[in-house]
Image (tube, rainbow, N blue to C red; front, top):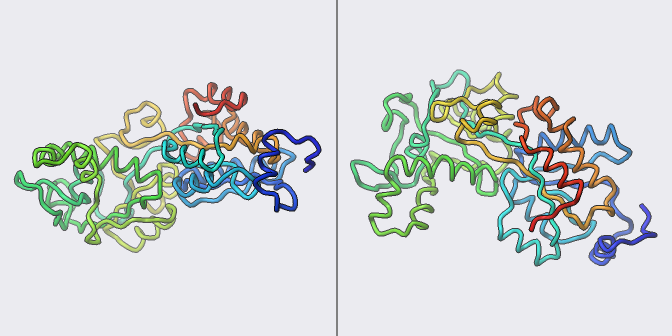
Length: 343
């Protein structure tokens, strides 16, 4: 691409990456494994329908993607970070310290988190947050006392659950899905069982009690998965009693291998997520480096195409893959068109 007309953004990029022989001609994206399949669908369609190269889309997790995003401005840094959670204030500060001051936040829709197991495995059909907390929490309430978690089977704390060994594969700490899991499942279960109240009564501050509620046992019953959902699926394949945490879209594309349980009596579907009835859902995002717009070819066009009605609308291919369309999609489209940045 030509740099005959250098905008302020172009000057910034040229200053940061003076060693680059020439500007990149491909949009570069990294981040959430949950957003990955949606971004891959969009990137492929973008390459087929626009006069720009197909964007390069990588995974790695929300936190890892945002860390790369916040490395600075320049052709040697990524243009877009995918995330299954909102960017944290600490990440915004890290971005600003590295010169990334103008960030466009784009909400693409919603997704649900499901608890799935082998089709032929134990009859895991219905969970409450309390069940997951009792199975995986580091400390649980037994006979009115907070104790280290020694539960070995699900039926020990809920007779309606199978007498199967506890084995769970949960997202690692770098995944945005982990935070939703902690806040909407572990925290809710901790409160429902009375463990949080007992922690505070024992002298813990509320902040310390929240941290304790979200701590998971380390005796091998709970395994962090740092890779994407395919690694979780492989772990389930190898462990007949295993329960895995997946995004709804991934599960829906693997129903020949997995079955899912309800949460709080509600089945995870696009309808129950859109209505807010399913309790473990979250918005999905990507973040655009505004300084790269007009310098990296096709960046704004890619962002606009991603959230177009044709892609992210109720009848678009992302919806067919499991994304729950955002009721406020039109407002997001207008914000991206205007290149509105986070305040």
